[in-house]
Length: 476
Ligand SMILES: Cc1cc2nc3c(=O)[nH]c(=O)nc-3n(C[C@H](O)[C@H](O)[C@H](O)COP(=O)(O)OP(=O)(O)OC[C@H]3O[C@@H](n4cnc5c(N)ncnc54)[C@H](O)[C@@H]3O)c2cc1C
Image 1 (cartoon, helix red, strand yellow):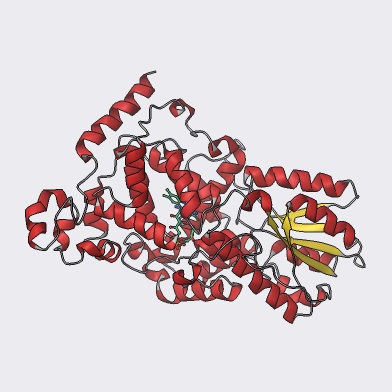
Image 2 (cartoon, rainbow, N blue to C red):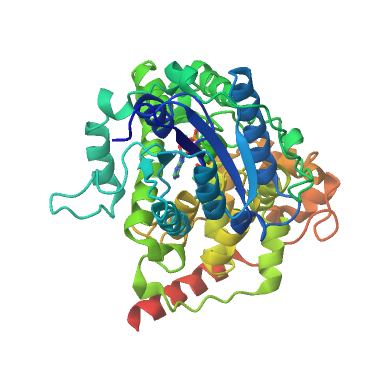
């Protein structure tokens, strides 16, 4: 254990908050005199487009963190470059006895941390890592045979049974902030200095600060959690928390979400919401135990599936012009806001893979570029679930019918009309399958092929083609 008179570096990554931050609490209580740092990692940033909402979100969250640390008489040292090189360098410059950080379970992050531990090891400085991003990590929830769960329901059962006080207790980092190193104030590099331009985060009205995340959690718990099980599937309702971006960057603690659900009025709403947090943990442990899923189907028998990968159909899907209003409205929500409702993620993922017969990895990569809450584990898990290639996935023969999904989950076409204003005047009933109603639609001023596209494929035909594609690969 490092001596209490020593100094430590605290490396912020996907935990951009001061409260209930596990590794920060440990650094403050075990060492004290903690120097906080954040590195804009060129290895991650350089390949990104120069306008990227996520970079804007991180920049805003880091700026807010830095301002709070300055109010406390400390600072956040912010650097731009290779993360490993900078961490080793800063650890040397500040003569620290240890570097504290929270665990990251993505394959690339694990590889980076191995390099960081090695670079610090040369100077005899340990890299101390702690669980923070998830409630149960790695091998904490395992089968009786000590194997990782690959089916969600039994995983969730054990997860829920173990969700006691200890699992969700706060790590009291905020109580020890007086132990932060006193540092002179340094300027925050601008977005432009990092090589990026604003990408429209302001229009999303998301507050990227820790206070913003806390307010979003309180709003959800006060107004929506008790009805969550009823409202969560309807994209036109404000039925879900919209906390995923905060979970991604750690502007809120995942334990705080679980504590809030446990303290909420008992009932199906809070329990269903807890299940979603369990799905999140489930996908994290899956990626950790099976890192190959990052590039390959979990079900290896589907590795050589003959996806048709038509670039024009893929472009129509990306741009929201498939002629299926629920799909197009969802894609426009994604493209314009960086968010997509969970029900719609399932619908568009099913449509891309089972109707357009495009490899799920194309869709996964597109989501990775567009989603503000993009997170490798749930994104990969969600895509493989929809494509039927994943663990505990949708069976390949159960194929979403986009028109039925639209009727069921957007019955008044409120969501569709919001994102497709060309259809705003049409009768909602006509919008779930507009090609069946072209003359009635024309009467309301919508001419198919002119004001709104005709369908790029026929669902029934594509459904059969998809079943053949899956049957073929299963036979071989
Ligand atoms: C194809 C596909 C891709 C997805 N990609 C991502 C992604 O990149 N990043 C991401 O965070 N989620 C992803 N999800 C899961 C889910 O759609 C989002 O987490 C959810 O829509 C976020 O909205 P919310 O915060 O209002 O969620 P809520 O319904 O309020 O749920 C609370 C929290 O639980 C977690 N969560 C909810 N649903 C799921 C789920 N099905 N799987 C895992 N975690 C869940 C999220 O952290 C969320 O903030 C994906 C789902 C699918 C089907």
